[in-house]
Amino acid sequence: METDTKAVAQKLTVRCQFCNTWNRIDATRVIAGPKCGKCAKPILLERPIALDDETFTRTINESDIPVAVDFYADWCGPCRMMAPAVDALAAHVQGKALSSIRITPPGSLPDSTSAASRRLSYS
Image: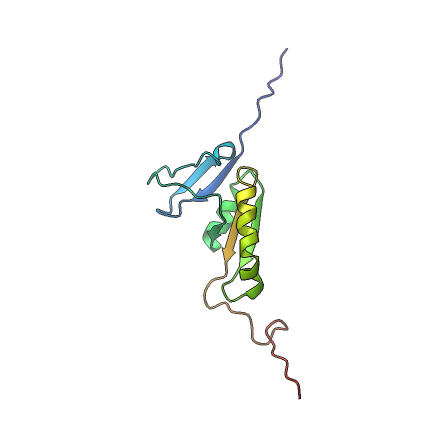
């Protein structure tokens, strides 16, 4: 009796950056440059994917491969400083993991009373 040793294909679910259509992509074909099933434009996975509250949950829950998440905000200096390293990570892990960034929505600036945003005054 033979056992079936065929590996189960790992998939990832991402939204097209151009037409917002959800696409299910075979992880082994990511480097080949997948295209959107609706608009046929390339799905750019060699760089981080911007996510919001709606797309974050679906992308994480429906992807079979690990997802590296960078919580990013334009107002955050360390976030901007790390951006090139996150870009390099995305290119390096294509097909093995999905690199994504979750943009902090406008208006959600840090609380002015938080320790990170308090200004220290010296007298």
